[in-house]
Image (cartoon, rainbow, N blue to C red; front, side, top):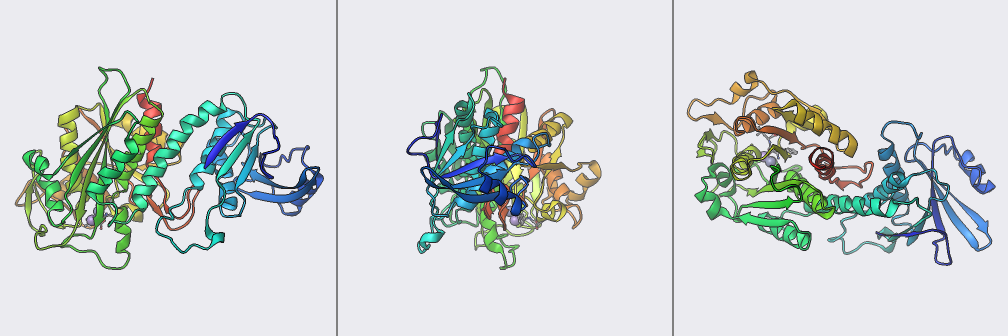
Amino acid sequence: MQIHFTAAPDANTPRLAARVINQDMLPDDLPTAIVEGAKASRFAGKTGQVFEGFVDDTSGVLRLALAGAGKPDDDGRAAALERAGAALTAKYLTSGEEALALDCRSGDLDAAGVTSVLLGMRLRSWRWDTYRTKLKDEQKPTLSSITVIGAPEGTEAAWEDAAAVATGVELTRELVAEPANVIYPESFVARCKERFAGTGAEISVLGEEEMAALGMGALLGVSQGSVREGQLLVIKWMGGAANEKPTVFVGKGVTFDTGGISIKPAGGMEDMKWDMGGAGAVAGAMLSVAGRKAKANVIGVCGLVENMPDGNAQRPGDVVTTMSGQTVEVINTDAEGRLVLCDALTWAQKEFAPKRIVDLATLTGAMMIALGMEHGGLFANDDSLADDLLAAGKSSGDKLWRFPLAPEYDKLINSPIADMKNVGPRWAGSITAAQYLQRFIDDGVAWAHLDIAGMVWSDKPGATWDKGATGYGARLIDNFVRETCEG
Ligand code: BES
Ligand code: MN
Ligand code: ZN
């Protein structure tokens, strides 16, 4: 989507124009036919509502769209404006129209407001058609250009920043949407190297030999059933003060999760291509952070493996030794995410002595049972970190809900033959998974775990996404960095 800015319409202005309308406040400079049409169609300017009408103009017939943004003083104004923009691209993306003029001359919106509308437009226009070779013309996107008319001072600069955010979200979606024969650990790394080229972020990778030398027996135990080599990808953005300790984000990147020998049922197993959604969110967020040259030291670590059944796969009952020295009895090879994360967390703490460490993972089906597709689950050993994440969840729209940690849950993963087992009893499955991870957090390190199993993929279109990869987590991290690490 190309976005241009201009002060006033000219001969090249698209004939499709759109205006953002506040609820119950139809402006009085609208053509009578539009006002009458909007009223007759019960268009009230509610968030996400769209009305369109055609009007005869001196220059020809114009197509005029009104997009509702709700009431200006309502909570979540930025989100409502994003939804207004998203509703416009949802409607016109495959309409045959190639260009749209967003008319901001009424002055109702400030620079941040216009930017929100544009961000919603861009995010909702993202599609993944790479493998659809037989799309009919009317199924193909046509809308590719937005002309913003009369935006207030400062909008272009604000948009530059928001565009970097969108680019990050789009990378997350792309990594999540790609099938597992295309995105596997090494190709995940290669895709990131491509996308981060020229951003100033520094990329490094550990292969299996290096991870073996470091003693990452848990991560490698998961990877050993796959012909794909596991990778630990590190993306560094050191835009802050030299003496400032970094904030580290660790992503679960299981590029495909069959369950391993504890194999999953066939129905719906294809969903497990997005079991790298945590790593995808971390990579996308790092691209946003680097793209907008954030004044903060931020490091992303992605634990990338494929979980396969195989003659060489690990067995239920195997005992592995983690990099921390702690041993784990692998009761269920399908509880592999925590095995990957524990070594990635240990390594990241040793390597970077982070101020705060946050992991993101599509870790448990139980999280989806608890929260559905509306919130990610948050677990934390530190209230101030938890509060900052909850706040970033609200401001970004990637919502979170906090769950408890407690010694009573922790003891449920004690093993009679090793330091712990990788699964607890049936109940509280998301919490015992978090307790497992907490056993790998050093004293004094503020840590949070985000279980985003329900959030990375959607069967239906949402606020700013079509069905498929949502991009969840990228904006959450980016906003967290913005709100608590910068300045
Ligand atoms: N990747 C899955 C969790 C998952 C399931 C995410 C469905 C999204 C949708 C994870 O590796 C897993 O298999 N977890 C098991 C844990 C169990 C064996 C303790 C689960 O949730 O069933
Ligand atoms: Mn699994
Ligand atoms: Zn998994």
